[in-house]
Figure: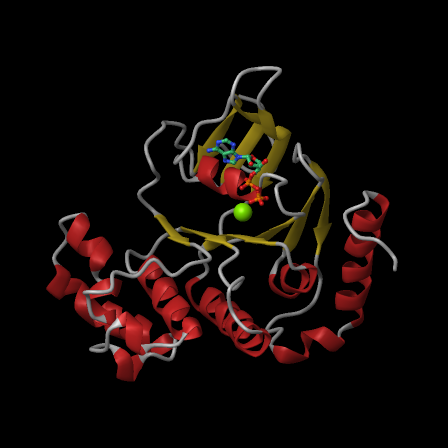
Amino acid sequence: MSQTAVGPLSGIRIAGVTKRFGPVGAGVTALEQVDLDIGDGEFVAVVGPSGCGKSTLMRLISRLAEPSTGSISVFGETSNLPPPDMGIVFQGHVLLPWRSILDNVLFPADITGRDRNALKPHALELLESVGLKDFAQNFPHELSGGMKQRASIARALLMRPKLLLMDEPFGALDALTREQMRVDLEALWLEHKMTVVFITHSIDEAVLLADRVIVMTPRPGRVETILDIGIPRTRGLHARRHPEFLRRSEEITDIFLSRGVLQRH
Ligand SMILES: Nc1ncnc2c1ncn2[C@@H]1O[C@H](COP(=O)(O)OP(=O)(O)O)[C@@H](O)[C@H]1O
Ligand SMILES: [Mg+2]
């Protein structure tokens, strides 16, 4: 195996990945020749226009789908089984309406046959750290959209995953809630230091959160460029005033302008 910055047993290595749907020629190429290495504990954001293959990329990493060509290794594992050390958060909260918030957070323990009582203190801790300490016994319909999404994050973290995949997790939230969730996610990541792949179509969110931003081209999605974001942590709310935030956001905007993803008027 060739040597790159990420060792074979660490991080995520995506090599020469193409994903086609449907027959060759007549189908859709969602991703084309994607190469990407993500280090252990890194926070990476993937930003790109709608339909450029972001969700497909996430499904490939989580083994919900297989690449047409190329390979993906997650912490050295190349099999088609879902990596055990993985939590996923989607745009919709996907909480079970008949379970309390605490029981929803404990759901991964129940389906994997773990001792839920042993994990309960951890579940309660997580609920506290996402601001839902007082809502453990409530049901999803009693919570706001932001709170439900916080519960989903707590659930994704229950099994102490090494990898957290987030597919537009704040996409359905209002701007104010979204800003708060972003700040709180950074705090959670600084505490748990898992590897995060955060998918978004928001340039701001990508630059404010990530160590590196992967900018995708329109479909078929390729890696257009990768930007290191040097804004010091903890970034919090004021990161928006950092010159690096403005510089990097402008760089990405210019890329999207040149690709026709954005237009000037
Ligand atoms: N299961 C599927 N079957 C057929 N086409 C799909 C499937 N999933 C995604 N696609 C197509 O692949 C492209 C990329 O989709 P997706 O990864 O969802 O984009 P994004 O998340 O960036 O908006 C789109 O053209 C979409 O229609
Ligand atoms: Mg998507």
